[in-house]
Length: 260
Image 1 (cartoon, rainbow, N blue to C red):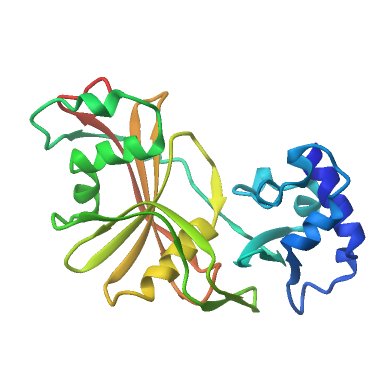
Image 2 (image 1 turned 30 degrees about the vertical axis):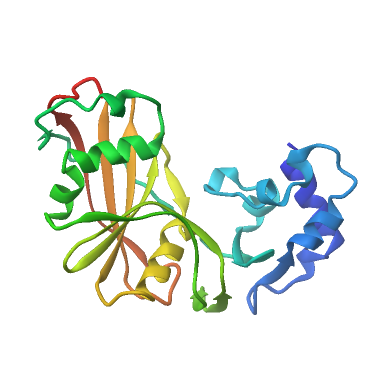
């Protein structure tokens, strides 16, 4: 795989194996990656964005897997390579499938056009499944798309990390009277995800509100036609690895859009 070849060269060029990860992370810049990979010809071998996109444990290059490493963006064009657990499990929901009666009383033609996680999430919200799962009828869609984080710090296995102006993306965020719910959505089955996708938006919005900020992972299982929701929390907002599963549920939506 090109990813493996490229990262092997990056590690060799900057002697990353000589680094003591027990003391600090290894800082790596986009310019360093470009310089190391400049003689490669394929986009997948030299594009920084592609090389640093490691959203699941399995998507990491072998050199990361074999040495228990993961990568985080810390500011525009700068990354941290850390030793430790960078991912959180998305466990199978074994409590059975709940039949949820949609609050919609008409058919949404537009919901059946396309196949993106955002449209499935929008349909779950339009049916009031999100409000029902959160037990909060006041939730309104107020957050969507890409934004840049404020500066914040945290630790990974006792190693301090500082983040400033990193681009994040929230598939949907809902604000109610007392809480903000931030959702990372997928339209395919995954067994784990990088904690960053839940943690960075969580820290970003904690900076803007005194309301409770709740991270949610959402999945449309197209094979089973279920909508699956996992609610997480960070027991210590300054600890990247303090993420814990609170509860989960699997739902089939009964209503006008039975074909969706």
